[in-house]
Image (cartoon, rainbow, N blue to C red; front, side, top):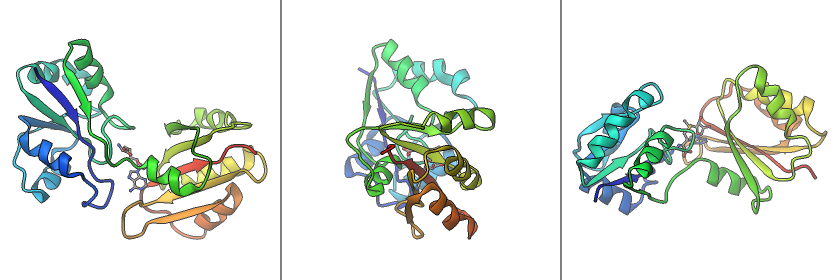
Length: 223
Ligand code: SAM
């Protein structure tokens, strides 16, 4: 029976990979990945030599049928993205759905993903939360931020460093005064930073310097 295994990989610190993930990557027939250079470096770090096949946002629609056929002819195929858990704001969904439709076993190993540690360190209620991935670009962004007014769950976004100031500005302007946010930057890396406060306070903090690195932005529930 063929099997597709989604394998989470580190989001910064190379040690954040499980023993099982390394074992499974070492034992599979081949590895489907986003960028063969990124995953090649990771496998090299763990002394794993495997055939790498590229599958990413650019080619996934075109390649999904072929990929499923290749999986059907294999025993175990691993799927990794550049960082974190595949399919979480990354390619993966199309392939998982196509495998399920053909009764191919799909497994996802537990492991690194950016939004979980960010949520936990935010200190905001975590019994109920929503994950929204990246905010829309341009027009839809304002509507998406206005939709947070009155939201009673913690809301998690992925954000890019170039858009953070604009997003915080809009949040400070459009959301309830005093609504709290948390920016979790560069998790598990040397310059990890967690900044909590009102949208205006966090905006002031990041306006004072150049924003760099990878970011999870969390909005507290309306109190
Ligand atoms: N699949 C990944 C996961 O499981 O978290 C997410 C991939 S998505 C393309 C990349 C985004 O995740 C970044 O733009 C950033 O918002 C967030 N991210 C990834 N690594 C991070 C880190 N070390 N610290 C903070 N945010 C991170």
